[in-house]
Length: 223
Ligand code: DX5
Ligand code: ZN
Image (cartoon, rainbow, N blue to C red; front, side, top):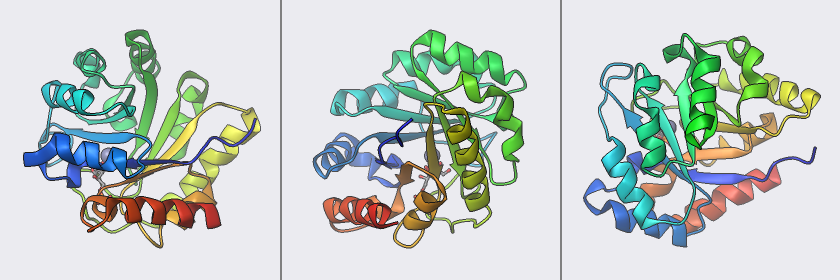
């Protein structure tokens, strides 16, 4: 199977929420491939962000696929409402899903791509049994909850291991990385095997979104 295309997914967590629709349109115009939406419940992670109502507003602002990252406990209770709001991909943390196989099937039945997310301290082995039942794996390279944190190096080995599994089994899975991605780390995660880069600070906290996105793409291409 040919390698899946590189995707840049700006995380709106670092955007100006007072001008959210404008910010989303700006990264779309600047060349983003997907929009990454961070949903936090104040329980699973120590921060609280948005719910389906805001996802719906983002959906109305852009044509780009919405990659919704659920950092919430018991995602099986509400994931359909994110799909109804316009999520194209729904990511659930393996740490929140005692019945992971069932929850991934639930996402697909609701009509979205199923993604599973791993915290930095969670071993890759936990998702190996469900690799045939999902569309995307997201490796966290910070502890989730906040933007602007430092990249955790241990993610590189995990990405490489999951990449090997995907290639050996010829699976059509995107391998995404989230946390501390920017100049310097983008090339290293792509070299390890990631093909989707989430970046908040490295895009929204720079003067030119276009330069930031092109810079990430160049760095990834050169790796
Ligand atoms: C962290 C979120 C990330 C965050 C990344 O919990 O999942 O998507 O926005 O921010 P940066 O790119 O600033 O590390
Ligand atoms: Zn995220």
